[in-house]
Image (cartoon, rainbow, N blue to C red; front, top):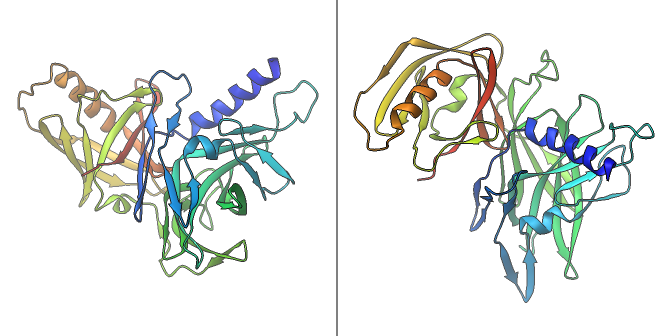
Length: 337
């Protein structure tokens, strides 16, 4: 029991560091709905996805994927069996808390055909932590063979890679990432890149991407509207509060309940680092119906004007801020139309 608790807390720490949140991902004609359960201390999700083709049933719901067997992770060897999305090996030292660990990243799951028979398959993301500073990302393809869910292929993506997006399109797996550039330290990736894999004879083969690699600057945020999900990890935004953000021509613009705002943003030399100029902020002064609207507006603008960095976590936008010597991360998801 003692070892189980230490394993759980270690995995929980990894989970917390990735700042995950619930998400709806639409891929082709299939929709995966991930719903947050507020009663759970460790955020859990449920999916409702049942597909059928030629009398074959395909269950790629999250609980099924969280209990599946996976293989192909370097240095582990053999197969790992996830329990509620987690696996932990034996400690490196007897009685120790450092051990190899694997976690399924719940927030991005792609469903679609990868072969000529057009049977749907699932592509998931696995985080492998050997116990040091490295966080190794893998993609894994899941398929049904003889009515049994099987991990037919797994491929390494990179160390401490941030995932911007994951889709299946035209029988290809497309993963947009923030990865370390030539002169970037592993901790602080700054290249925005696209990786493409195809499935050939149950092996993932990477194909060239014609999308140019660019550096992580605020310009990458253009053409997307975001909605605030949490003020910081474990502190979700009230359902009654609507806070949005867009990046347009050097400015953050959006709504805080019934009021509009615009704030000047300047990119700094380090990738993902920005300076938000609070003295150049403009906010309308409408009286909103929500009783706590003034409180939310004050808190949001205080945190936003103290943002120092942005990046992505499993398709989410993460803005790091510092207020009163406290560092937090606001999480935004794509605004659903």
